[in-house]
Length: 357
Image (cartoon, rainbow, N blue to C red; front, side, top):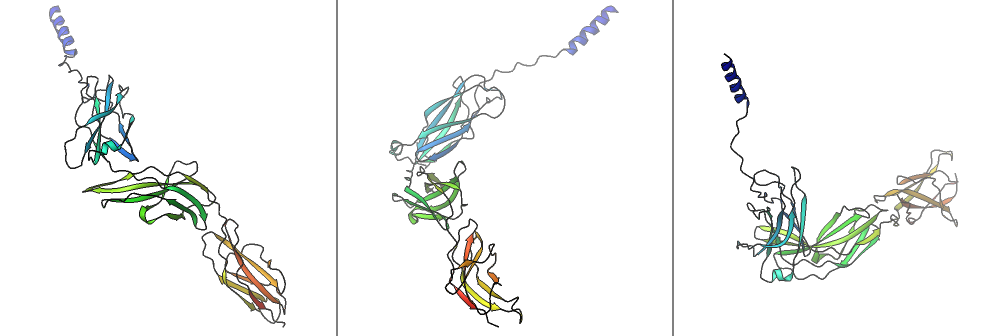
């Protein structure tokens, strides 16, 4: 009986123990390929950005340092075989934790030597190598056109006009082939801000200046101009940005008054036999400025100096003047005032005579 119990206990112990499976193969330590490579060209400089791999092809974290090889091939863009060459090398650090890797950056400079062989595009890729020199798969590739970038406009200037900021510039652009279009991007930002605003994009051959009427007065602005070349090669098309022009700064102070009102008329109006309630009714054509605040009314008698007779700005193009005397002839003019207190010149005078009775 005791021997039977011992056997049962031994069997139970054996059933409770895990049975070891087949041993897992060691990791090949091959990094995953770079799949989000992007390229931006500015002038003659190419900036490449991508996410650094953190895992191997078998799902393990990268434990040993490797390499990131920045590679470039030149092509005419017509299906020729690509011969990639390594132009720079960055370290591929071991991954400390799971998740998305850091953003990496590399730069390349285009030179005349790159274009001397008739190449039309530079193709870039990032090859991730493990510590053993092994890599996996084909990383994504990006193409950058090798056409020359346009020179930046010079003598850029900015000055204020009633409608906003007038920008002017000079340029000396080379003739463009039929497959290319030359344009300028006019940009601005508030002083101290990093956010750029595209004011307008214009054909380079048709403009030497423009007015930015989208500003807010009483603010500091910085302006610059970026030349771009729009290109097309079959079904492919894009644009190449040249280097920016020098920045010009300006304080948009509004010192421009509205236009003087026009169409002023004066008509005597009597409320009855009694002089009390009689007035001279003034009307004129309304101003159309967006920043108009109101109007001032000026009056004088013969040989007198014009005197403003309203205590507050008149909001509508009409004003009844009750401060009149029988038998007097009055002369009137009107001015317009904007939101910043700039006052126009006086309108043409009109006159009206108050009856003696």
